[in-house]
Image (cartoon, rainbow, N blue to C red; front, top):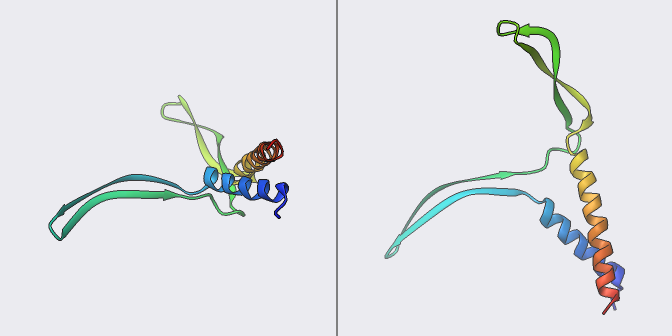
Length: 108
């Protein structure tokens, strides 16, 4: 028999994958007439950044532009990886889901 800890782990992983999986957005329309099928639309998929991609932030250069009203900015490395925040959220979600699932399994 599978232990409650393993079931809670597997279900927590499924939860995290569902919560942090690829984001798919778009519209699609399909028309059929007899055996003819036509359609059009647009779909985009957003995935997590690469694990080793360094994050970038916009910072002021000290120079003024546009009649001196606005400070010019440039992109510089933030010193953190882009996925760090997402990974922190994933770990927190996993721990919360695991604890909740284990409590539900043990209360049966």
